[in-house]
View 1: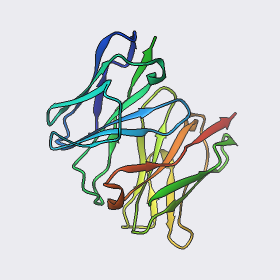
View 2: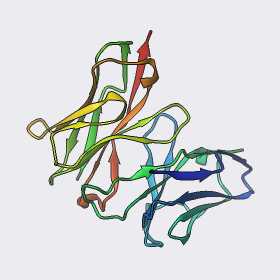
View 3: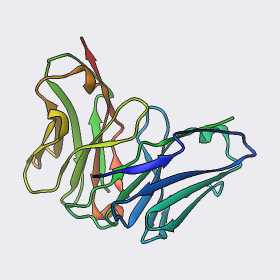
Length: 116
Length: 114
């Protein structure tokens, strides 16, 4: 069963707030990802964690702070966001970062973020 | 560099008609190719993937795709569209050259008319 669970599904926050998005997977995957998706656009990679260590940061502003407490959990801490940060934030996971035939990236349902 | 081009940002078909969504890739090494579907207000769900085992790949919900190296294509088809197929479809490529990351096409929105 492939399942990536994200909470909350919807989040409205002010520009001075601090909030967090959470992601959990129980597939034993060792790579986890955060993507940002704006309306009518494909997902854009933000961060990649491999074996609980940050391996890719795609020049994301520091108001987004990822955290990987353990191999099953991935958080995205949000602080002082701007209205243009409103988007769908998708968490994903894969067995690891190797590109092999069986190593598929699986996505969660996403968290809809609105910054007011 | 790897890239994916999806021809047609919007495709409209009648219920029961053939669905054809086009995807062309660019890769200097053998690619792994994927089709993901995104239903309204939901995340991405894997439809099918090409991993070099077979050129014709069958996925969920009656979809299939054929890898054609000579045409650098990986078009998605379904013989008979259903209303529930209405969604956004993304083609993606993944190779070691992109650090293992998915490179997405811009997406094709499929509408199904009754």
